[in-house]
Image (cartoon, rainbow, N blue to C red; front, side):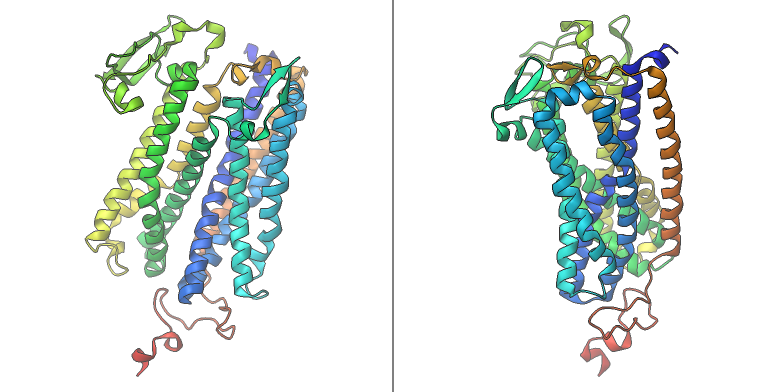
Length: 480
């Protein structure tokens, strides 16, 4: 266990732990924020109380995720100054300001209006409340923009040059709009939205399967499904664009993603590795199952490659990602989940077109509902797998081609780093089980359907099955 005495390895493990844990929470808040804007807009437009109750119910899960996200995210920022001080000193002219933008522009915007969104229902005008919800959602997604901008710059640094080990910014906008930036932000935005949609759909499916307010949650389920019809296939396409970028700009990462040791020449078809067992010592795969002639279609949508795909042997061992197997299988896990979610969306859409998702019949779709419950956590796994590919595949560079990870770490006593690593692991374990407890408690209790509805004389709705009108709310024609 020599890694216990290696400061760089321990610092990487600590940052990986905090990043993987933190990522769980903003993934849902960024997508769920958009969903809250949608249901509140539907309530303002239709005045159907179901949409109001949906906004109140799902906002509880939003607040829970926001709180855990804040608690777990703060230590990440501090590590740039404690564990990665040489990196911060070298790139602070650009990277530091981008992280500052995320905190001062995005996080503060989200936090400032969150109180109005949560507690302002009976205290402010409905339009003001709706604007607050929009700003909360915008702030959450603006965080994604700045974080992905910073990380994309680490993948493809642009807009300046390193002078005496310090990055000097020549063109700030060129640095922001670096080659990886646009596709990376689109890919992550769609990932957070898709994950949130399947979480909403999965929780709604659980209620429907257990015959708890099936008509009420059928609305949430169909809103999530209707949005996923556009998001799921679009995410697959944007993921393809992201892979193309890696192919052209990060050849060592591409080789690791494909466990490709030998170069595949241009102008020829190439097989695609479906599953394999990479062996770093022998620089080959111990066993492998390939799909003939498929790599060209995956990378360029045509059989023959226009450019060679360089193998890992083309690069010195010290310039390659060391954990080829982790990158290889994380990439395939992400792809498999993306296609599974798209397939589940397609199957559910077919049932919708057949009229099987009506409030009266949706509970009979038991296997379909179980499929959505099973899919609820898969988006998280796909997102974490994608970040493993993105960051572990970039190694041994912290800034690709410019700063090695070993040179970016602070010179700290290994025992100190190990102590904080254990402390973070313990704290995050407590936070995780606390979040599971309170989240499951919110779900078990279900929506409160007795809350006063703003604009309807602050009276709770009459006892009715959600999805149905109360006597005073029925259309005039139905009361005559």
